[in-house]
Image (tube, rainbow, N blue to C red; front, side, top):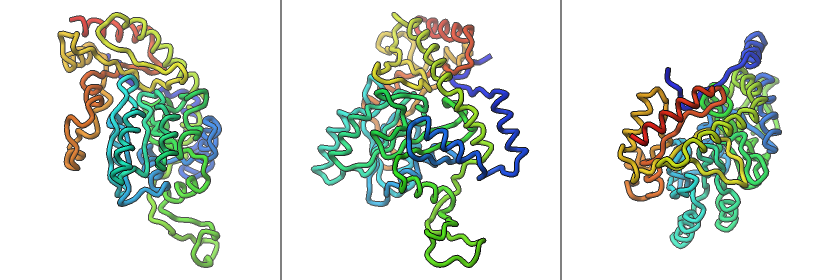
Length: 387
């Protein structure tokens, strides 16, 4: 039986919450969506939360609400899922990348600073920077924020991997260092709503804009309408929005799972500590974690010391898969995707990201793993890299 790299846990309490919705009067846009929003906002210490059908939708709405559009620029990390960059293209903006810190895999503040200096000279400073918390390890947001204040760009934290993480003593999502933070609730993430996402912010106007755009740009608020309503049934479309709504079923599941978030993160740390110890002395690097922060550990990504190994990166990967270990690689650098190559990006532009891709393998890590599962992973990795 294969041990997957990630897996959701659904308890009887979760099932009861969803069944309760099925037996209620609302399957979508009832009381559970705002209740889930309030719970997440309270957990992270943010003023407002906007639940949507995916983190990709949340990124899109965040960009639109910050005014990103044609003629503007968005920068992000090349080591991320494509949505972190695509959200800029959805808005008609140009997208570019900042190479990573090899220690964390996150966007490198020093490289960001150097690129901004050149961009200021060229008149190409970005309007938005999307800082990705890869694998759940917080990006150096204090440094990114300082640069944002100097150069005037807005900041989105792509915390799709990082609900439950903490940065310098505060929950990721508090908004101290960014305009909007985005979370994902995909099944392999820390908690799940099956599919779903959320954007949190401390700015009421930004939240209001995202709420409008997630539901077709339609309002029933007379104060927002351009003329007097025809009657109590009346609504107006005042913006070109989308159908990005979260359902009651998803929100009820998410609210139930949120009760176990801290326990899930702690369990991931237990597994990671065991991996760290077991892999000491092998020709690989275990994930670095900032002692001043707390990773959510959505992923546990090894980096192979390929120069010290006889098997190649691919051979180690295939040996692990053959042993029933459902490893994966996170991620293929976005700038090497064919769509982005057509935009002019090419191999060699972001060498640290490309090196990361050539060395990284994500191991199974999820709360329901047993001691036996951990043993299998450890034994398989040890055998694969020493062969």
